[in-house]
Each structure stands twice: as C-alpha cells, then as structure tokens.
Image 1: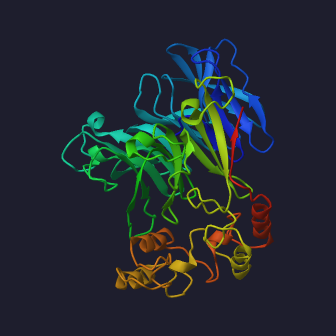
Image 2: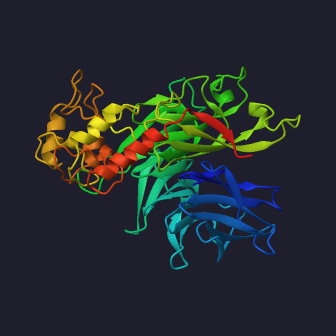
Length: 471
C-alpha cells in the first residue's frame, strides 16, 4: 500500500505536476541524482498514484474525470503497458515482482484484486478490503466490519476496521482479529495503525481513547505450534511503511502536544521511526517534517526514506517567498543513526552499529550452511534443528528474568513471547550450529566470500544521515 512517494532500492517514484490534468510519473535516482519522466500516454489527461518494486512502476492513467486505467512502466525497457483494467479515481496500488494489487476495480470497488503482469490476468481474492499491500504471495489489507456485516475482532459491534491477509498461493484468507488501518507488510510482519476508539483500549497509556497507535502483527509460521504475536509499540502514528523490522510512520504533532521535529511549534506533520529490534522510537526533536513515508533497504547497506513535505511544516524550501509548495524529500539512514537506532544490512551482530565485530560474526559462521529461517539462537539443545524440544525448554523458563542466552533468545534479560516468536519463526528448520542467518547477506543459505563483499559494500557506503530534495 503506498500513498505518496514510493521507494525501491535507490529510486523514488512520485507524481509531479498539476492534478488532475498534466500530472506525470517521475522516478528519481538518489545515487546519480537524475530524475526521469515516464512518457505520457497519448490522449490521456495525466498519470498518477505510482508505486514501484524493482524495475516496475504501477500507476493509474487518467482518461477523464471518472475514467482511469491501471498501467505499469518497465524502467529497464522504457515501455508503458496499459492493462485494460478500469479503476476508480486515485487507486491505491501495491506491487511485488510481477503482481499488482488493488481494491479499486471499477464496477467492483472495495474488493481486493491482483493483476499478474506475466500473463496479463486480473483475479479477485473475493475479499472485502482496502489499502492492500503485498509481499511475495501474501496480500495484507484492512476490512470494514460494517461492509461485511461480520464482527471480525469479536468485540460485539460492527464499527471497526480489522487487518486480514490473503495467500495467493493457497487461495486462503486469514483474519488477524487486530483492529487497524493502512497495513504495510514485509516478510512475515504486518504493521498498521490502530484507532484506540475502535479498539476500545488506551494503547499508549495517556488516559484517553483519542489516538492512533502503531502496532504490528507477526504471521505465524506454517509449522505448529502456530503462535500469534501482536506487538503494541505504544507510539502515536499513522500510515506505516515497513522494511526489515523498521517502521516509518507519520505523526501529527498536535495530537501528541510535542515539538517532535524541534522547530519551536507543535503544528507539523512529521515522520518518525520505530525499531522493532531495539524497541526504540525517534527521539523528540529529531523527527523529519513530512508525511506519507516510504522506506526501503538498498543494495549497499543503507536505507532510503522518501516522504512528502509541505513548506508550512518546514519553511520555504525553494526560496520563492511563500509556503504554498509541497516537495518530495528523502533521507539516507546510516548504520550509526539516532533516528530510530536503525541497524543496517551490514550490521551482522544486531547491535545497531557497523564495526569490526560484524566481520568477526561473519567469520564465526564462515562456510556454514542452513535454511534461511534457521536461527542458531533458537536451537536451545544444540541438535541443529528447531523443534518441540526447544519450545519445551523455553516454556520451562517462561517469565524468568536476569539471564542471558539459552531460553532468553533475544538477550533482553527476559524470557517472554518475543523469544517464543524467534523460535516459532525458525520452527521446523535445520542448520549447522554456527549458522548465523544475519551473516547470510545474499540469502542463499551459504556463508562465503560473497557475503564478505556485501558487508564491505556496507562499510564503503556508510554515510552521515542527510536530507535531500528531489528538486
């Protein structure tokens, strides 16, 4: 699900120009600082609402005020393809590999569909939903109870939006039972914002039910036991973008009554981060003025964050003497950043910093083999497989505090459900005992010199956190 700019690797796609006529899709390369336009479709009013993955930019072509069509552009070939799928105004799209998701097919709005680029087919999930987001074969979306007539979260009313997901490969839908909006999925985690009023809970502990709070849901592994984990970050925010456990989201300063970006007022929209590994949120005064964030990791071990900024939040960015303009901006997030304490691709040991210790960790695992899901920390009895024996060991120590290692898998001094989640995520997998999935930087199940090269790239491109405009 993407509203606003969309970033993938080192490119940012966005709409530039007057809307609803004359707008064009652009993509900006943050490495070369070159911006290119997707050629306008002859006879169309405009092109809008882009989202991208790899070389594919999916967007809507405007033929008239109420006539839109789904299209996609291949950066590699420089060609635009019209799909023939009519969509409603301002479609919210998501793309992964050759699949585009949408819930805005004209004549059947509010039903989640997916379009296959490889064979040109449009298929329905048959599920009521909005704001779909896709990772591999899983489409996450929100569903209105009022529309379906079903109490999806079991609270006795039909007033809520609830997060569900559809597995294309299995043709099956799962109800998380979690109240939420604007889902973003990456790997086996779905992040979203939750209205306290709908949930009926004071999720951030401020004594009222007026807020929207960021939560995330961990999809249970296919092998039993199917442990579900729902994490409350207790952080005010909406419109998440998720990558590698880093949640970027927008927050209205007025809602929290704090000057989050340090400009002396509490009138701005800002972008903040939550690090699911460390549990840290952007410090007060360090947020970035903006909204509609999109975050993605790059090939060389940094993250790129793109977002929209109105000059009323940040000042006169283009020096034209007014505060009427909106800009697409981006930030590079380095390995040693105070913004969310973000650990990068080259942070093998998970301490949030790039250092010689990461080479040591890679060296300790050098030459080992294992399944991508295998985590040696979860192999509590050291037999090279994650199974019920490991889960039983964890269960026997549940609630213990003050110990490191063993059943305290994540080394946070507590044996709790976070440790269970690591075990369940790796459940059924096998690997050599010195296998370290964090060191398998190229994700091929073997740690060798190629991982060392990737790690080296991370150090080569370690950058100071910088804010830039696309122009």
